Length: 489
Image (cartoon, rainbow, N blue to C red; front, side):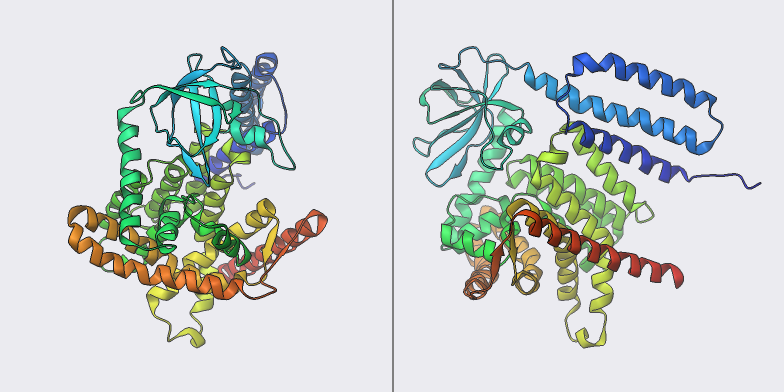
């Protein structure tokens, strides 16, 4: 009788999936960790005991996966219960330190405040006077636990940041400044310096687009331009999900392979990712994308024999360990994760399509950019439709036209800023190179959005039917492609 065996790397996949699934399931239940943990530990002990009794490999694997599932389930429950214990000292007169760079949104600014009890409060106030990271302030207003509105889960949106209280338009008194972490303060200064450099060297709306592409800021975007982006299905290019930087690194990897060693490419990727993280003020979403991108770069270069499924699962596991709430309640994480999967598994499909004779005159670097951007977009499209309820009829065309130049545009803006910091006179000239693709994106956006049938709003059952059909079609394409590959190997 043939002995059953499962490769170690695939067992590792099952363990990671079990943990992620445990966190996901737990996110749907409002369970008190302190009431269920003893019962869960008892189940885990029983499973460990049964593991020694089982002789069948599959039963032993199921027992271990169940233990890991329980760990993930308990971790989310623990983080949730810990947040429930947060209390504020005074619900009408709180004080504390601003712990993030305030986000400017039109005529308002939003930030998080931590009081003396280490309770995090979300504050929304007028744009002026402006506050900065590390300011110690006193609030006078109605500080309360947030409530969901419309169909938006506002409570869990804030909980993923660790905030369980919010206040709108309080009276604010600044008590002192520079009370935060000096390293983080320095990072935020770099981000501000980057934004100032772009605004100084590029006109509007190109400067706002450049900043949106690199750091996700929308403070200077006019409503008309944002609406046009939504109509033609390219809003994701200015979302700080971080997956744009993933596309840049993969694009550069494809271009450089064969020209310099794989190890040097990985080191270059590490340097560029680190610089990007610094420039964006170490935003959590960009750090997450950085982890994903490094794992992709590793898999494509010095770790090219690594199992890509495990790299995907490992990146997700690391990030969910740090913050279990992002798995279900962070669209930015989901965008990065789905884009990662698209880049790994769908890019061969797009690449084989572009190798047909009708595309033989398209330059290789254009094909590479098109492959990476379309592959990522193919997998994030269902999430965009689910989250925003809008389907752009013109999106397939607009993305094919605009997305291939996004990596180069971001790279030009990034390098132009670095040159401008080192040699201001030369940097101003270099920014002219970045201006041209930015101008092209704006022009194409106006052109496509002017089409009357460019987008339709969807809701209810129709929205989910379209998502379901789309996912099935993409799945069938993948199955057919990889079945063909296996038959010809």
